[in-house]
Length: 385
Image (tube, rainbow, N blue to C red; front, side, top):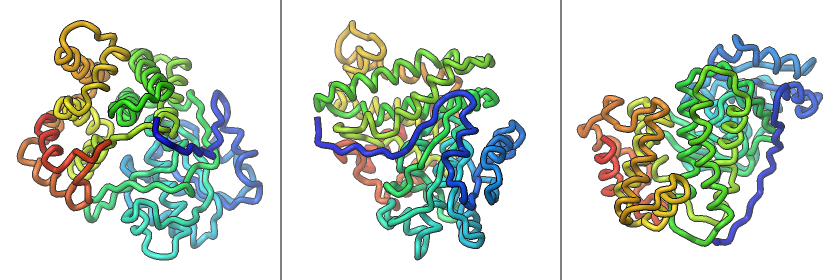
């Protein structure tokens, strides 16, 4: 196991009817900004519950945060925070809204060009406006981590930043908030959480047995609950397990003491920025292709993954690895998520542009051993078609 430090100050409030706890979690004298995405947050009553819990506090709203939150949109919220002298943010939504709140929190307190936050991947952040979150879409784990992904539409740049200053002070996780979600969003959440685990698990062995078993348990749980999650029934147990799995997949626990990959995400980000493909669906296309292209480098972990997650124990090593890759692709397809770029209108003629964007953003040596060069990324994209 590698050396590590683990620090996560986010307070999790989990369970039914927990939105009312906002009243005790937000400072009584706060001047707050509620950030959200679409009007569904108002129609399904979540915003109403939030306002009721905030009581007599001074509260402003900022809506319209996109599924891939944009710098241009978020700067409107930054200006509102500054103009109205607001001192607390509350994100109501999924990972995109929470990511957006992290950027607003950092940018509103930043003296300089806020895009520097993204260009330095968060190193420029020295303080941030405090914020909390009400999670309505389990997927990204942003409710309990320090990272965010923001897109600048004018340059088609989709970058990551991370800072200890943007951990949520608290996150409300009420699984009943997922009852009105369409199956497409739930399927995306399953894929997102699954791939987050894989980016931290499918690397190389370092004898981190606890992290391995937790990761394998999360993967098995996601596979097991997927059919119940995608039914129209209000299955509290399935939604609760999805919500907690997605949080644990990216709150730092399974990353402690292990190498991490993240090349699938970096390639996927460029596909989203250039072609507007939903984030989880880029992961569903890139991950199986990356497993195929990098099978030699990941041989030991692929064999462990095959046995422990999919119970694949018979056949040659090559056959077991093939079966594990096929099982992964089959799982995504079973959720109604296509796993080939051609399904999204992306062909071989688009690969050069993706590679150019990776190069422009310095993504030229990705992966757990920095072995994913632009040539390897090209081969992965070709295998994704």
